[in-house]
Amino acid sequence: MAQTKTKVKDLTGALWNASNVLRNKMNATEYNTYLLSFIFYKYLSDKQLMEVDKNLREDGDVTPFTLEDASKQYQEIMTEQDDMSEALHEALQEEMGFVLHPDLTFTALVASIHQGTFQLEQLQQALRDIETSGEVFKDLFSDVDLRSTRLGPNMQKQNKTVADVLLALDGLNLAQAASGDVLGDAYEYMISQFAADSGKKAGEFYTPHAVSELMTRLALHGRTGLNSLSLYDATMGSGSLLLHAKKYVPDSLVNKIHYYGQELNTSTFNLARMNMILHNVPHTNQQLNNGDTLADDWPGGDDGKTTFDAVLMNPPYSASWSAAKGFLQDPRFSDFGGKLAPKSKADFAFLQHGFHHLDSDGTMAIVLPHGVLFRGNAEGTIRQSFLEKGYIDAVIGLPGGIFYNTPIPTVVLILKKNRTTRDVLFIDASEQFEKQKAQNVMKSEHIEAIFDAYTNRQDVDKFAHVASFDEIKDNDFNLNIPRYVDTFEEEEPVDMASVGKEMDTLQENKKTLKQSLFDAVSSLQYSDDNDTWVQGVLEVFKDE
Image (tube, rainbow, N blue to C red):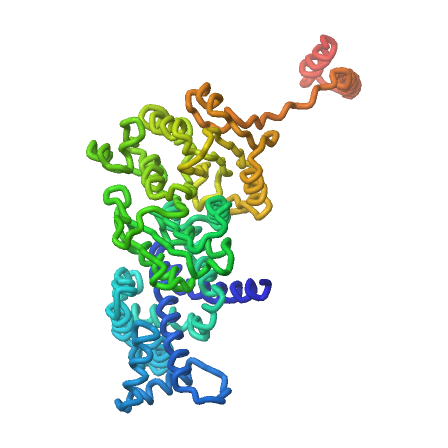
Protein backbone atom coordinates (compact mmCIF):
# COMPACT_ATOMS: atom_id res chain seq x y z
CA MET A 1 0.00 0.00 0.00
CA ALA A 2 2.79 2.43 0.87
CA GLN A 3 4.43 1.80 -2.49
CA THR A 4 1.17 2.54 -4.30
CA LYS A 5 0.74 5.81 -2.38
CA THR A 6 4.27 6.87 -3.33
CA LYS A 7 3.55 6.17 -6.98
CA VAL A 8 0.33 8.14 -6.81
CA LYS A 9 2.14 11.05 -5.17
CA ASP A 10 4.90 11.05 -7.80
CA LEU A 11 2.36 10.83 -10.61
CA THR A 12 0.11 13.56 -9.25
CA GLY A 13 3.15 15.83 -8.86
CA ALA A 14 4.06 15.38 -12.52
CA LEU A 15 0.48 15.85 -13.68
CA TRP A 16 -0.09 18.89 -11.48
CA ASN A 17 3.09 20.54 -12.77
CA ALA A 18 1.63 20.34 -16.26
CA SER A 19 -1.19 22.60 -15.12
CA ASN A 20 1.32 25.41 -14.55
CA VAL A 21 1.36 25.97 -18.31
CA LEU A 22 -2.33 26.87 -18.24
CA ARG A 23 -2.85 28.25 -14.74
CA ASN A 24 -1.86 31.82 -15.62
CA LYS A 25 -3.93 31.85 -18.80
CA MET A 26 -7.37 30.87 -17.51
CA ASN A 27 -9.24 29.90 -14.36
CA ALA A 28 -9.49 26.37 -12.99
CA THR A 29 -12.97 25.70 -14.37
CA GLU A 30 -11.53 26.23 -17.86
CA TYR A 31 -8.06 24.73 -17.75
CA ASN A 32 -9.21 21.54 -16.03
CA THR A 33 -11.10 20.66 -19.22
CA TYR A 34 -7.95 20.92 -21.30
CA LEU A 35 -5.53 19.23 -18.93
CA LEU A 36 -7.77 16.34 -17.90
CA SER A 37 -8.69 15.73 -21.55
CA PHE A 38 -5.01 15.72 -22.59
CA ILE A 39 -4.19 13.30 -19.76
CA PHE A 40 -6.97 11.01 -20.93
CA TYR A 41 -5.80 11.22 -24.55
CA LYS A 42 -2.26 10.33 -23.48
CA TYR A 43 -3.59 7.39 -21.47
CA LEU A 44 -5.43 6.01 -24.50
CA SER A 45 -2.43 6.58 -26.73
CA ASP A 46 -0.01 4.93 -24.30
CA LYS A 47 -2.38 2.01 -23.88
CA GLN A 48 -2.54 1.52 -27.65
CA LEU A 49 1.24 1.56 -28.00
CA MET A 50 1.52 -1.05 -25.26
CA GLU A 51 -0.95 -3.15 -27.20
CA VAL A 52 1.13 -2.64 -30.35
CA ASP A 53 4.19 -3.88 -28.51
CA LYS A 54 2.31 -6.91 -27.17
CA ASN A 55 1.17 -7.89 -30.65
CA LEU A 56 4.56 -7.42 -32.30
CA ARG A 57 6.93 -8.64 -29.58
CA GLU A 58 8.40 -12.03 -30.28
CA ASP A 59 8.46 -14.79 -27.66
CA GLY A 60 11.49 -14.52 -25.42
CA ASP A 61 12.11 -10.85 -26.22
CA VAL A 62 12.95 -9.16 -22.91
CA THR A 63 13.90 -5.77 -24.34
CA PRO A 64 12.55 -3.05 -22.00
CA PHE A 65 9.39 -1.48 -23.35
CA THR A 66 9.47 2.20 -24.27
CA LEU A 67 6.77 4.31 -25.85
CA GLU A 68 9.28 5.74 -28.33
CA ASP A 69 10.34 2.32 -29.63
CA ALA A 70 6.74 1.14 -29.88
CA SER A 71 5.80 4.31 -31.76
CA LYS A 72 8.60 3.84 -34.32
CA GLN A 73 7.74 0.18 -34.79
CA TYR A 74 4.04 1.03 -35.19
CA GLN A 75 4.83 3.61 -37.87
CA GLU A 76 7.06 1.18 -39.77
CA ILE A 77 4.50 -1.64 -39.74
CA MET A 78 1.53 0.52 -40.78
CA THR A 79 3.50 2.14 -43.60
CA GLU A 80 3.79 -1.21 -45.37
CA GLN A 81 0.02 -1.56 -45.88
CA ASP A 82 0.26 -5.36 -46.02
CA ASP A 83 -1.38 -8.30 -44.29
CA MET A 84 0.63 -7.70 -41.14
CA SER A 85 -0.48 -4.07 -40.85
CA GLU A 86 -4.09 -5.07 -41.53
CA ALA A 87 -3.94 -7.76 -38.85
CA LEU A 88 -2.47 -5.30 -36.35
CA HIS A 89 -5.18 -2.76 -37.12
CA GLU A 90 -7.88 -5.36 -36.53
CA ALA A 91 -6.27 -6.50 -33.28
CA LEU A 92 -6.08 -2.92 -31.99
CA GLN A 93 -9.68 -2.20 -32.93
CA GLU A 94 -10.90 -5.33 -31.17
CA GLU A 95 -8.85 -4.75 -28.02
CA MET A 96 -9.05 -0.96 -27.72
CA GLY A 97 -12.30 -0.03 -29.44
CA PHE A 98 -10.41 2.62 -31.43
CA VAL A 99 -7.26 2.95 -33.51
CA LEU A 100 -5.03 6.02 -33.57
CA HIS A 101 -3.03 6.59 -36.74
CA PRO A 102 0.73 6.13 -36.11
CA ASP A 103 1.33 9.85 -36.68
CA LEU A 104 -1.41 10.82 -34.20
CA THR A 105 -0.31 9.02 -31.04
CA PHE A 106 0.75 11.24 -28.15
CA THR A 107 4.33 10.02 -28.55
CA ALA A 108 4.36 10.86 -32.27
CA LEU A 109 2.99 14.35 -31.62
CA VAL A 110 5.70 15.02 -29.03
CA ALA A 111 8.29 13.93 -31.59
CA SER A 112 6.81 16.42 -34.05
CA ILE A 113 7.05 19.15 -31.41
CA HIS A 114 10.77 18.48 -31.02
CA GLN A 115 11.11 18.55 -34.81
CA GLY A 116 9.26 21.87 -35.03
CA THR A 117 6.47 20.45 -37.23
CA PHE A 118 3.62 20.13 -34.69
CA GLN A 119 0.28 21.66 -35.61
CA LEU A 120 -2.90 21.76 -33.52
CA GLU A 121 -4.82 20.14 -36.38
CA GLN A 122 -2.93 16.92 -35.67
CA LEU A 123 -4.16 16.79 -32.10
CA GLN A 124 -7.66 17.81 -33.18
CA GLN A 125 -7.72 14.93 -35.65
CA ALA A 126 -6.51 12.47 -33.01
CA LEU A 127 -9.30 13.50 -30.63
CA ARG A 128 -11.85 13.34 -33.45
CA ASP A 129 -10.72 9.83 -34.43
CA ILE A 130 -11.22 8.63 -30.86
CA GLU A 131 -14.65 10.27 -30.58
CA THR A 132 -15.95 8.73 -33.80
CA SER A 133 -14.68 5.22 -33.07
CA GLY A 134 -17.74 4.13 -31.11
CA GLU A 135 -20.42 4.93 -28.53
CA VAL A 136 -17.95 4.63 -25.63
CA PHE A 137 -16.02 7.70 -26.77
CA LYS A 138 -18.76 9.63 -28.58
CA ASP A 139 -18.39 13.43 -28.15
CA LEU A 140 -15.94 12.87 -25.29
CA PHE A 141 -13.81 15.91 -26.21
CA SER A 142 -16.67 18.07 -27.47
CA ASP A 143 -15.83 20.96 -25.13
CA VAL A 144 -12.08 21.03 -25.89
CA ASP A 145 -11.62 24.16 -28.02
CA LEU A 146 -8.07 24.12 -29.33
CA ARG A 147 -8.57 27.49 -31.01
CA SER A 148 -9.77 29.30 -27.94
CA THR A 149 -8.18 32.70 -27.39
CA ARG A 150 -7.66 31.57 -23.80
CA LEU A 151 -4.81 29.45 -25.14
CA GLY A 152 -3.30 32.42 -26.93
CA PRO A 153 -4.26 35.47 -29.02
CA ASN A 154 -3.26 33.83 -32.33
CA MET A 155 -2.68 30.43 -33.89
CA GLN A 156 1.04 30.49 -33.20
CA LYS A 157 0.56 31.20 -29.49
CA GLN A 158 -2.21 28.60 -29.23
CA ASN A 159 0.01 26.05 -30.91
CA LYS A 160 2.84 26.76 -28.45
CA THR A 161 0.62 26.62 -25.35
CA VAL A 162 -0.77 23.20 -26.24
CA ALA A 163 2.68 21.96 -27.24
CA ASP A 164 4.05 23.04 -23.84
CA VAL A 165 1.31 21.12 -22.04
CA LEU A 166 2.01 17.98 -24.06
CA LEU A 167 5.73 18.28 -23.34
CA ALA A 168 4.98 18.64 -19.62
CA LEU A 169 3.13 15.32 -19.73
CA ASP A 170 5.81 13.57 -21.79
CA GLY A 171 7.95 11.01 -19.99
CA LEU A 172 5.01 9.39 -18.21
CA ASN A 173 3.61 6.03 -19.26
CA LEU A 174 0.02 6.46 -18.18
CA ALA A 175 -1.02 3.01 -19.38
CA GLN A 176 1.43 1.39 -16.96
CA ALA A 177 0.31 3.77 -14.21
CA ALA A 178 -3.30 2.69 -14.76
CA SER A 179 -2.66 -0.68 -13.12
CA GLY A 180 -4.05 -0.94 -9.60
CA ASP A 181 -6.02 2.30 -9.96
CA VAL A 182 -2.85 4.37 -9.51
CA LEU A 183 -3.73 6.58 -12.47
CA GLY A 184 -7.38 6.68 -11.46
CA ASP A 185 -6.45 7.85 -7.96
CA ALA A 186 -4.07 10.43 -9.42
CA TYR A 187 -6.87 11.65 -11.69
CA GLU A 188 -9.13 11.94 -8.64
CA TYR A 189 -6.47 14.02 -6.94
CA MET A 190 -6.27 16.30 -9.94
CA ILE A 191 -10.04 16.77 -9.91
CA SER A 192 -9.93 17.60 -6.19
CA GLN A 193 -7.21 20.21 -6.78
CA PHE A 194 -9.22 21.80 -9.58
CA ALA A 195 -12.20 21.86 -7.22
CA ALA A 196 -10.12 23.67 -4.60
CA ASP A 197 -9.07 26.27 -7.20
CA SER A 198 -12.39 26.72 -8.95
CA GLY A 199 -14.41 28.75 -6.46
CA LYS A 200 -18.00 28.26 -5.42
CA LYS A 201 -18.83 25.97 -8.36
CA ALA A 202 -16.53 23.23 -6.99
CA GLY A 203 -19.37 21.31 -5.36
CA GLU A 204 -20.98 20.77 -8.73
CA PHE A 205 -18.38 18.23 -9.79
CA TYR A 206 -16.53 16.93 -6.75
CA THR A 207 -17.42 15.51 -3.34
CA PRO A 208 -14.49 15.60 -0.87
CA HIS A 209 -12.83 12.24 -0.35
CA ALA A 210 -13.74 11.93 3.33
CA VAL A 211 -17.44 12.63 2.70
CA SER A 212 -17.48 10.14 -0.19
CA GLU A 213 -15.87 7.50 2.02
CA LEU A 214 -18.32 8.07 4.85
CA MET A 215 -21.40 8.00 2.63
CA THR A 216 -20.25 4.92 0.73
CA ARG A 217 -19.47 2.95 3.86
CA LEU A 218 -22.82 3.86 5.41
CA ALA A 219 -24.73 2.93 2.25
CA LEU A 220 -22.93 -0.41 1.88
CA HIS A 221 -23.05 -1.38 5.56
CA GLY A 222 -24.66 -4.77 6.05
CA ARG A 223 -24.83 -5.58 2.35
CA THR A 224 -23.11 -8.96 2.53
CA GLY A 225 -23.57 -11.99 0.33
CA LEU A 226 -24.37 -10.01 -2.82
CA ASN A 227 -23.51 -11.54 -6.18
CA SER A 228 -23.42 -8.08 -7.76
CA LEU A 229 -23.94 -4.48 -6.69
CA SER A 230 -25.83 -1.67 -8.42
CA LEU A 231 -25.14 1.97 -7.54
CA TYR A 232 -26.95 5.11 -8.63
CA ASP A 233 -26.04 8.80 -8.43
CA ALA A 234 -28.53 11.13 -10.08
CA THR A 235 -26.21 14.15 -9.76
CA MET A 236 -22.91 12.36 -10.28
CA GLY A 237 -20.57 15.24 -11.13
CA SER A 238 -17.17 13.72 -11.91
CA GLY A 239 -18.31 10.31 -10.68
CA SER A 240 -16.04 10.38 -7.62
CA LEU A 241 -18.81 9.44 -5.20
CA LEU A 242 -19.78 6.35 -7.20
CA LEU A 243 -16.21 5.18 -7.70
CA HIS A 244 -15.48 4.96 -3.97
CA ALA A 245 -17.52 1.75 -3.75
CA LYS A 246 -14.65 -0.28 -5.26
CA LYS A 247 -12.63 0.30 -2.10
CA TYR A 248 -15.25 -1.00 0.33
CA VAL A 249 -16.47 -4.24 -1.22
CA PRO A 250 -14.85 -7.69 -1.27
CA ASP A 251 -12.39 -8.31 -4.13
CA SER A 252 -14.84 -10.80 -5.60
CA LEU A 253 -17.37 -7.99 -6.08
CA VAL A 254 -15.10 -5.26 -7.51
CA ASN A 255 -15.72 -6.22 -11.14
CA LYS A 256 -19.41 -6.85 -10.50
CA ILE A 257 -20.33 -3.31 -9.55
CA HIS A 258 -22.71 -1.65 -12.01
CA TYR A 259 -22.61 2.14 -12.02
CA TYR A 260 -25.58 4.29 -13.02
CA GLY A 261 -25.20 8.05 -13.08
CA GLN A 262 -26.70 11.19 -14.57
CA GLU A 263 -25.18 14.65 -14.89
CA LEU A 264 -26.63 17.85 -16.34
CA ASN A 265 -23.41 19.69 -17.21
CA THR A 266 -21.89 18.24 -20.40
CA SER A 267 -18.28 19.04 -19.51
CA THR A 268 -18.68 17.41 -16.11
CA PHE A 269 -20.49 14.46 -17.68
CA ASN A 270 -17.52 13.88 -20.00
CA LEU A 271 -15.20 14.15 -17.02
CA ALA A 272 -17.13 11.37 -15.28
CA ARG A 273 -16.88 9.18 -18.40
CA MET A 274 -13.10 9.61 -18.47
CA ASN A 275 -12.91 9.00 -14.73
CA MET A 276 -14.75 5.69 -15.11
CA ILE A 277 -12.40 4.47 -17.83
CA LEU A 278 -9.29 5.53 -15.93
CA HIS A 279 -10.57 3.53 -12.94
CA ASN A 280 -10.77 0.45 -15.16
CA VAL A 281 -14.58 0.24 -15.07
CA PRO A 282 -15.70 -1.92 -18.03
CA HIS A 283 -18.03 -0.14 -20.42
CA THR A 284 -20.61 -2.87 -19.87
CA ASN A 285 -20.66 -1.98 -16.15
CA GLN A 286 -21.53 1.68 -16.56
CA GLN A 287 -24.71 3.42 -17.65
CA LEU A 288 -24.18 7.18 -17.69
CA ASN A 289 -26.54 9.81 -19.00
CA ASN A 290 -26.23 13.51 -19.78
CA GLY A 291 -29.55 15.03 -18.73
CA ASP A 292 -31.73 16.95 -16.26
CA THR A 293 -32.53 14.60 -13.38
CA LEU A 294 -35.64 16.34 -12.09
CA ALA A 295 -37.15 17.33 -15.43
CA ASP A 296 -36.67 13.93 -17.08
CA ASP A 297 -36.75 10.84 -14.88
CA TRP A 298 -33.79 8.59 -15.61
CA PRO A 299 -33.09 5.71 -15.74
CA GLY A 300 -36.30 4.71 -17.41
CA GLY A 301 -35.60 1.04 -17.70
CA ASP A 302 -33.81 0.81 -21.05
CA ASP A 303 -31.93 -2.18 -19.65
CA GLY A 304 -34.69 -3.21 -17.28
CA LYS A 305 -33.03 -1.58 -14.26
CA THR A 306 -34.86 1.22 -12.43
CA THR A 307 -34.02 0.61 -8.76
CA PHE A 308 -30.64 0.07 -7.13
CA ASP A 309 -28.88 -1.50 -4.16
CA ALA A 310 -27.49 1.86 -3.08
CA VAL A 311 -28.20 5.47 -3.99
CA LEU A 312 -25.48 8.07 -3.34
CA MET A 313 -26.11 11.76 -4.01
CA ASN A 314 -24.57 15.16 -3.42
CA PRO A 315 -27.00 17.39 -5.36
CA PRO A 316 -26.62 21.16 -5.83
CA TYR A 317 -27.91 22.81 -2.67
CA SER A 318 -31.15 24.79 -2.75
CA ALA A 319 -31.21 24.81 -6.54
CA SER A 320 -34.22 26.07 -8.50
CA TRP A 321 -36.54 23.78 -10.43
CA SER A 322 -39.88 24.18 -12.18
CA ALA A 323 -42.07 22.66 -9.40
CA ALA A 324 -44.82 22.43 -12.01
CA LYS A 325 -48.11 21.00 -10.69
CA GLY A 326 -47.84 18.14 -13.16
CA PHE A 327 -45.09 16.67 -11.00
CA LEU A 328 -47.76 15.75 -8.42
CA GLN A 329 -48.76 12.98 -10.84
CA ASP A 330 -45.15 11.81 -11.11
CA PRO A 331 -44.62 8.65 -9.01
CA ARG A 332 -41.40 10.16 -7.67
CA PHE A 333 -43.28 12.98 -5.92
CA SER A 334 -46.91 11.92 -5.67
CA ASP A 335 -46.95 10.10 -2.34
CA PHE A 336 -45.69 12.71 0.13
CA GLY A 337 -48.59 14.78 1.40
CA GLY A 338 -49.61 16.28 -1.93
CA LYS A 339 -46.83 18.86 -1.82
CA LEU A 340 -43.83 19.61 -4.02
CA ALA A 341 -40.47 20.99 -3.00
CA PRO A 342 -40.45 24.80 -3.36
CA LYS A 343 -39.49 26.25 -6.71
CA SER A 344 -36.47 27.97 -5.18
CA LYS A 345 -35.28 24.95 -3.14
CA ALA A 346 -35.17 21.62 -4.94
CA ASP A 347 -33.45 19.78 -2.06
CA PHE A 348 -36.39 17.51 -1.26
CA ALA A 349 -37.10 16.96 -4.97
CA PHE A 350 -33.61 15.48 -5.38
CA LEU A 351 -34.12 13.38 -2.26
CA GLN A 352 -37.48 12.08 -3.51
CA HIS A 353 -36.03 11.27 -6.93
CA GLY A 354 -33.16 9.25 -5.47
CA PHE A 355 -35.42 7.49 -2.98
CA HIS A 356 -37.80 6.48 -5.79
CA HIS A 357 -34.93 4.62 -7.46
CA LEU A 358 -33.85 2.77 -4.31
CA ASP A 359 -34.39 -0.99 -4.03
CA SER A 360 -36.76 -2.17 -1.32
CA ASP A 361 -33.82 -3.49 0.71
CA GLY A 362 -31.33 -0.82 -0.34
CA THR A 363 -29.79 2.18 1.44
CA MET A 364 -29.62 5.79 0.32
CA ALA A 365 -27.09 8.40 1.51
CA ILE A 366 -27.56 12.03 0.44
CA VAL A 367 -25.84 15.28 1.42
CA LEU A 368 -28.11 18.30 1.85
CA PRO A 369 -28.04 21.69 3.61
CA HIS A 370 -29.32 21.82 7.20
CA GLY A 371 -32.47 23.65 6.11
CA VAL A 372 -34.14 20.39 5.07
CA LEU A 373 -34.25 19.43 8.75
CA PHE A 374 -36.46 22.26 9.94
CA ARG A 375 -37.89 24.39 7.10
CA GLY A 376 -41.68 24.44 7.12
CA ASN A 377 -44.56 24.72 4.65
CA ALA A 378 -44.28 22.22 1.76
CA GLU A 379 -40.90 20.95 2.95
CA GLY A 380 -42.32 20.35 6.41
CA THR A 381 -45.16 18.32 4.94
CA ILE A 382 -42.80 16.19 2.83
CA ARG A 383 -40.45 15.67 5.79
CA GLN A 384 -43.34 14.61 8.02
CA SER A 385 -44.50 12.11 5.41
CA PHE A 386 -41.03 10.53 5.20
CA LEU A 387 -40.93 10.27 9.00
CA GLU A 388 -44.41 8.81 9.32
CA LYS A 389 -43.51 6.13 6.78
CA GLY A 390 -40.33 5.35 8.71
CA TYR A 391 -38.05 6.04 5.75
CA ILE A 392 -35.47 8.21 7.54
CA ASP A 393 -32.93 6.02 9.29
CA ALA A 394 -30.29 8.53 10.42
CA VAL A 395 -29.44 12.24 10.44
CA ILE A 396 -25.73 13.05 10.58
CA GLY A 397 -24.61 16.66 10.97
CA LEU A 398 -21.25 17.25 9.28
CA PRO A 399 -18.71 19.98 10.14
CA GLY A 400 -18.89 23.32 8.37
CA GLY A 401 -16.21 24.25 5.87
CA ILE A 402 -15.42 20.72 4.61
CA PHE A 403 -16.73 21.35 1.10
CA TYR A 404 -14.57 23.36 -1.27
CA ASN A 405 -15.02 27.11 -1.08
CA THR A 406 -18.17 27.11 1.03
CA PRO A 407 -18.52 27.29 4.82
CA ILE A 408 -22.09 25.95 4.74
CA PRO A 409 -22.72 23.14 7.24
CA THR A 410 -24.32 20.07 5.71
CA VAL A 411 -26.14 16.96 6.80
CA VAL A 412 -26.08 13.38 5.54
CA LEU A 413 -29.47 11.69 5.53
CA ILE A 414 -29.61 7.88 5.49
CA LEU A 415 -32.86 6.45 4.14
CA LYS A 416 -34.30 2.93 3.82
CA LYS A 417 -37.65 1.65 2.57
CA ASN A 418 -38.47 -1.43 4.64
CA ARG A 419 -37.64 -0.42 8.19
CA THR A 420 -39.54 -2.05 11.06
CA THR A 421 -39.32 1.00 13.33
CA ARG A 422 -39.75 4.73 12.93
CA ASP A 423 -37.00 5.89 15.27
CA VAL A 424 -34.19 8.09 13.92
CA LEU A 425 -30.52 8.08 14.87
CA PHE A 426 -29.08 11.58 15.28
CA ILE A 427 -25.31 12.10 15.19
CA ASP A 428 -23.75 15.51 15.81
CA ALA A 429 -20.41 15.25 14.00
CA SER A 430 -19.97 19.02 13.70
CA GLU A 431 -16.73 18.86 15.71
CA GLN A 432 -15.29 15.85 13.87
CA PHE A 433 -12.68 17.66 11.79
CA GLU A 434 -9.14 18.98 11.70
CA LYS A 435 -8.73 22.64 10.85
CA GLN A 436 -6.39 23.30 7.94
CA LYS A 437 -5.53 26.45 6.01
CA ALA A 438 -7.92 26.24 3.09
CA GLN A 439 -10.73 24.25 4.67
CA ASN A 440 -11.69 21.87 7.46
CA VAL A 441 -10.81 18.22 6.84
CA MET A 442 -12.35 15.05 8.22
CA LYS A 443 -9.63 12.53 9.03
CA SER A 444 -9.91 8.75 9.28
CA GLU A 445 -10.50 8.88 13.04
CA HIS A 446 -13.46 11.22 12.53
CA ILE A 447 -15.00 8.94 9.92
CA GLU A 448 -14.53 5.93 12.20
CA ALA A 449 -16.23 7.71 15.11
CA ILE A 450 -19.28 8.49 12.96
CA PHE A 451 -19.37 5.01 11.41
CA ASP A 452 -19.13 3.33 14.82
CA ALA A 453 -21.94 5.50 16.19
CA TYR A 454 -24.11 4.57 13.20
CA THR A 455 -23.47 0.83 13.41
CA ASN A 456 -23.85 0.68 17.21
CA ARG A 457 -27.03 2.80 17.13
CA GLN A 458 -26.88 3.75 20.80
CA ASP A 459 -26.96 7.01 22.71
CA VAL A 460 -23.53 8.61 23.14
CA ASP A 461 -23.34 11.64 25.41
CA LYS A 462 -23.13 14.87 23.42
CA PHE A 463 -22.65 12.93 20.17
CA ALA A 464 -25.49 10.54 19.29
CA HIS A 465 -29.11 9.91 20.24
CA VAL A 466 -31.75 7.46 19.03
CA ALA A 467 -35.01 9.43 19.00
CA SER A 468 -38.33 7.61 19.10
CA PHE A 469 -41.08 8.54 16.67
CA ASP A 470 -43.12 10.03 19.54
CA GLU A 471 -40.17 12.23 20.49
CA ILE A 472 -39.89 13.45 16.92
CA LYS A 473 -43.65 13.99 16.75
CA ASP A 474 -43.53 16.04 19.95
CA ASN A 475 -40.97 18.24 18.19
CA ASP A 476 -43.46 18.84 15.34
CA PHE A 477 -41.30 16.68 13.03
CA ASN A 478 -38.49 19.19 13.27
CA LEU A 479 -35.19 17.29 12.85
CA ASN A 480 -32.83 20.06 13.88
CA ILE A 481 -30.02 18.12 15.55
CA PRO A 482 -29.61 20.28 18.73
CA ARG A 483 -33.17 19.28 19.68
CA TYR A 484 -31.98 15.70 20.08
CA VAL A 485 -28.25 15.84 20.83
CA ASP A 486 -27.35 18.18 23.69
CA THR A 487 -23.78 19.38 23.22
CA PHE A 488 -23.98 22.07 25.91
CA GLU A 489 -20.89 22.16 28.15
CA GLU A 490 -21.43 23.62 31.63
CA GLU A 491 -18.87 26.17 32.71
CA GLU A 492 -16.81 25.35 35.78
CA PRO A 493 -18.21 27.04 38.94
CA VAL A 494 -16.54 30.28 39.91
CA ASP A 495 -14.52 30.24 43.16
CA MET A 496 -15.86 33.46 44.71
CA ALA A 497 -13.40 33.31 47.64
CA SER A 498 -10.49 33.35 45.19
CA VAL A 499 -12.08 36.17 43.25
CA GLY A 500 -12.49 38.18 46.48
CA LYS A 501 -8.85 37.69 47.45
CA GLU A 502 -7.76 38.72 43.97
CA MET A 503 -9.86 41.91 44.21
CA ASP A 504 -8.34 42.75 47.61
CA THR A 505 -4.88 42.29 46.15
CA LEU A 506 -5.71 44.58 43.25
CA GLN A 507 -7.03 47.24 45.62
CA GLU A 508 -3.82 47.11 47.71
CA ASN A 509 -1.71 47.35 44.56
CA LYS A 510 -3.79 50.32 43.44
CA LYS A 511 -3.24 52.15 46.76
CA THR A 512 0.49 51.50 46.65
CA LEU A 513 0.73 52.78 43.07
CA LYS A 514 -1.22 55.97 43.89
CA GLN A 515 0.95 56.69 46.87
CA SER A 516 4.06 56.31 44.70
CA LEU A 517 2.65 58.71 42.14
CA PHE A 518 1.65 61.22 44.88
CA ASP A 519 5.13 61.18 46.34
CA ALA A 520 6.67 61.63 42.89
CA VAL A 521 4.46 64.63 42.05
CA SER A 522 4.97 66.16 45.52
CA SER A 523 8.72 66.10 45.07
CA LEU A 524 8.60 68.12 41.83
CA GLN A 525 10.25 71.54 41.86
CA TYR A 526 7.72 73.71 40.18
CA SER A 527 7.45 77.28 39.00
CA ASP A 528 4.56 79.64 38.57
CA ASP A 529 4.03 78.17 35.08
CA ASN A 530 3.21 74.69 36.29
CA ASP A 531 2.01 75.46 39.80
CA THR A 532 -1.67 75.27 38.87
CA TRP A 533 -1.19 71.89 37.16
CA VAL A 534 0.73 70.32 40.04
CA GLN A 535 -1.76 71.58 42.61
CA GLY A 536 -4.56 70.11 40.52
CA VAL A 537 -2.90 66.69 40.44
CA LEU A 538 -2.34 66.77 44.19
CA GLU A 539 -6.01 67.65 44.75
CA VAL A 540 -7.02 64.55 42.69
CA PHE A 541 -4.92 62.24 44.82
CA LYS A 542 -6.21 63.97 47.92
CA ASP A 543 -9.80 63.33 46.85
CA GLU A 544 -8.92 59.68 46.21
